[in-house]
Image (cartoon, rainbow over all chains, first blue to last red; front, side, top):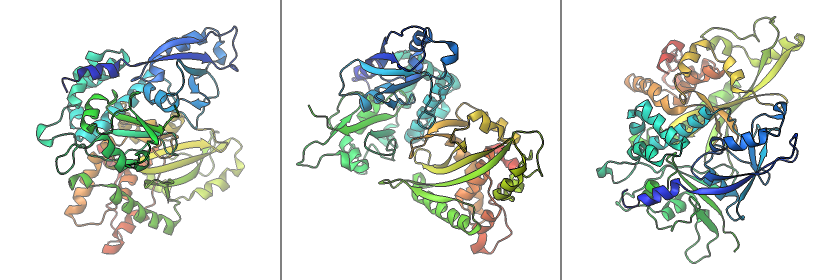
Length: 275
Length: 234
């Protein structure tokens, strides 16, 4: 976990250039200019868009403003998914900037979680971190930490402080040498072609014979339709943080370097885009 | 490795199947659902409750009973409530859905639920809180993620409220240890649901507990039913 520290920084500081436009049917007192922002891949929409909200609220009347929501090409964006994941899932083959539409009414209750305050985002984030540790360490590491350490993880993410975050997160990334890896790998696989939101299963980083499992092993086991047959053409594009890792990469390495701050590996699979 | 599979998904499905068998016998409305192409499944139940808006309540069957003994409410079948409220003008029917899913991360069952009016508009968390018995509230408000939060249903992808599962092992371990000690049959799902359900308006008729003991002939033992006072462990 030492030589590849640059990877950790690259992941943390990944950005997506985004253009926010107000939905045309929103009632405004004067025309709303679009707002441009570089969104952090590893953060959450409602955590980093205060300026966007303020910008559009300036041209609207108070009574026309209720909970903000973001939409891309008709799809309401789930704020509780990391921004980079949303982009890779919905817009990775589109030209930049990512065009997001902002709404202040008609909140789709059946599709989106409410986000009334930053506390809700913090609770969601910490809940993911806790769940990941349940898989890795039976929750031992997270439960032994003090409340201030939990707070530091959150503040590190909220304030975009890499060192502050990793000072605590590295404890969650450690594993006892004799075990040769974490108990289970925290991961979620997202596809646009399925009914359910994501795949999650128990999967070990190391096989019983001591061999390190690879990304390809995981996919074969958990999502076999995503992996091309030996002699067949690649039908699907497997992406993490906007890149396509080689399928022979050890899961353990991916786990340590390409996890999101919530400690999960968010893997997205879409049909191979036509070039 | 065996320890990891202590409450594995198969065990979960087995206990749910037993639970549903009894539910079918007494018409309690629980059923099993699977999603297409997915081996995951869950247990679910829909029930309707009346919420009185006026101060005057009729017969007390539809008013919220402020007691910590949920079993008494459970003995009244919901259909009676419909007949009572014909005479009240300002009442609302609320549809509650309860889903029991398995969490492979925590290796325990998890209770998901949501409530809506008949026109489909959902109830906010604060409205659901109003239905939580006082004796559960203080304990549930312990920590930001030890309580009820809104989350995405892992199979349906829609917003549901969830009772966070991270403490489940803590309060279920003594139950299971005791059952092993005294060689009793305990349905994990029955015990667990009897503890967490009442906190969100879901009650289990007593007969579930008796059903677990049918094989042993101990029809009167209700030990798999946890009395509310031991919920301090929650």
